[in-house]
Length: 210
Image 1: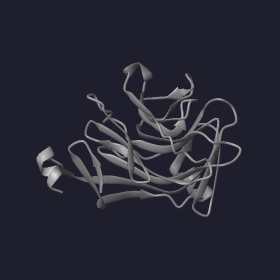
Image 2: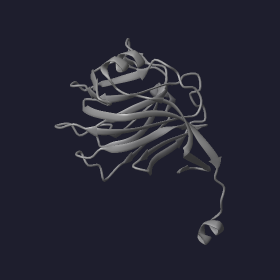
Image 3: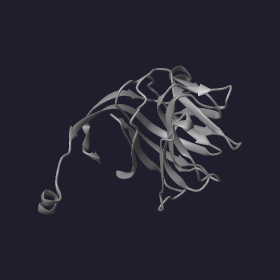
């Protein structure tokens, strides 16, 4: 169970919408590569972007409504930054060199080891960043992230790292994907869920009884 403000996400009851097997054939069939070099084999995809810029892959299909991505990511040496993702996306604006409307987030990014989620266009001023103090560049991380209603969330290894509200959430678009930014990242077990949720209402009195 994943708990955010006033909402519990029940993982075992959530509907699986897509699971990547990550062969080179399925990567090119199911995803648009907007930047960087991406290779897939035996259920693992590796993204690489040498320059100081972003490279994202976007699902060709839109998954509208509440969404949760569930996957594992690991930085590959000598890189130690930007295990990235996107959801509720409308793809890449090649003219501007940045994402169209979307949420983009990641682990160990923003040049200063921050983790979080931001909304494009950036003029929307919807973002939240935190320092994930125990980041280990040799470790593979389990990432669960997405949107339920107006609430955006990022869990790492079952721990809530960032939560924020967008009072004007992106509902028109639903592409999902993975990304790198001046990094080389290995991803596996990429799944897309429609999260099953139940309200979480409590009081301090009730919590003290637990």
